[in-house]
Length: 116
Image (cartoon, rainbow, N blue to C red):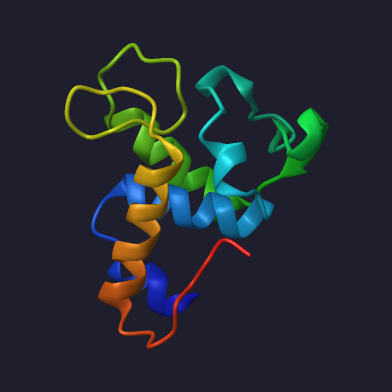
């Protein structure tokens, strides 16, 4: 995990990696999240998972720090938690997978990583 953290170049990359690591969420779950879904008081969010089931997940302080840094640098009105860098719109599953793959390749971890 430290190798991945060291190579993140942007708050968005760091926020995605930290949030996924902290919560155990799948890519398909995080791309559906909106900024207002986050409960900052108890560090939680309700995600819609497989079979359209809802569950509450919790994130740690490190994920909170990077989420806040990422959200504070954004100046768009898109409600999505994670958006594209150009012409902000909700990140797709493929785009999020690409971000994770790029971080993995930069880390020289020598193993393919996945959210699982």
